[in-house]
Image 1: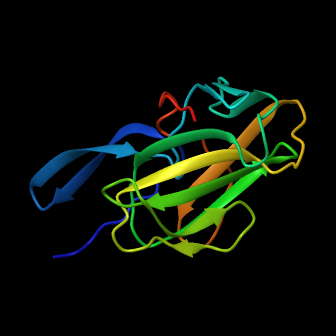
Image 2: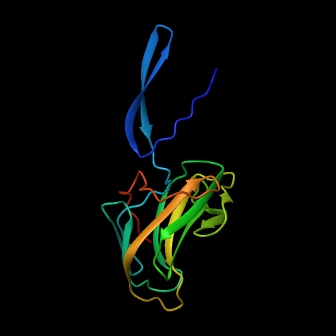
Length: 170
């Protein structure tokens, strides 16, 4: 039995027509985003995030304190190695992804923007995407943020995630 790998250019639905001899089969294909993050509107700790039409986040406000901010938790969609990049960032805000077990407890390690690729620890069930203030005295923010978590150890151009309607908070 052979294997077939298909890489889509942009997310959406299409089909693939396969022919072997006199048999032809059309197979539906859904192309998913390379960006594994899930996020959406959120408010808390002095910050507010809304989703722009292109799927990026617009963040406003001043965090209540250092290392406070916004959080989204969602099921871990992959295993293996992941890398996080923020090609469009807001100075003073630090995006990261932490790994959670079935009870919601944080496992060892995290992946940070600009850092190396990280192996997802065994037992990871959920991911927690955080945007936290890295400033000792947080200042007001008003800007757009593009963050991408993807499988492997190579970062690619930013792509809108499939889920931009996940409610976040603190």
